Amino acid sequence: MQIYVQSCGVYPNHDYTWVRDDNKQIKPSLLYSIDRLRQKNAPSIIISRTGGELILLVFGLRTSQRYDFQGREIFNSLVWIAQVAEEAFVRKLAACALRREQDFLKIIDRSIVDDDNDELGFKVLWTQIKELSFARKAEEKLPDSTRKIGKNTQEMRKKLAEELDQCKLPEQEGAIVVVTGIVESETLKKAGVWRSLSRLVEHEAWEEFTKQKEDFIGKPLEILRLIYTYLVYCFERIC
Image (cartoon, rainbow, N blue to C red; front, side, top):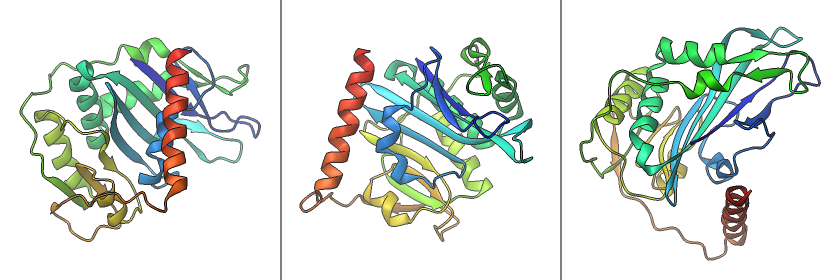
């Protein structure tokens, strides 16, 4: 399993930067394929599948005592890239993030600290993050394959967390779960996301939908974006 962290330091030259668990400064390539499904710079949770790997993005976690030079609160973001065999752990991480469980949040918070002596302005205590575990196990029920979308509210996030606790993820490529801010429902529906929550959705409860077929005719930029993402992903795996 690979882990990436994005954070920043106190001073102006310590901008938000992604760093991998080998301390290499690099943005997870798989993010390029899901960035369009989330509101930039807004708290988001995404689970996506590419080949035999799962990617979990938890974006915009608040820190308890870290502020930049202007007194603005610093936010942390994390990405886990796991094998399919580690799906239960990925689902538990996502469920904890959805419920904003204090034990989960405290471990992440204290694992990313200010470090003025580092060029990034922060330091990641990777051992603490990698030791993150759960006493309770996720169940392995078969998922309801019906695609559903709803409004991003605390109650709906709780319902989604319960489903992730109990059910396996469907066998589909691309984005499986998306929880974000202001993203049009049509964007999420066209992507065929299995479970999605957005603040722009009007329905307080789940709304079922059928995925529309993608039409790539006349969309050369979309095709090039997918090819680029795949090539960068393959290059990272080789390195």
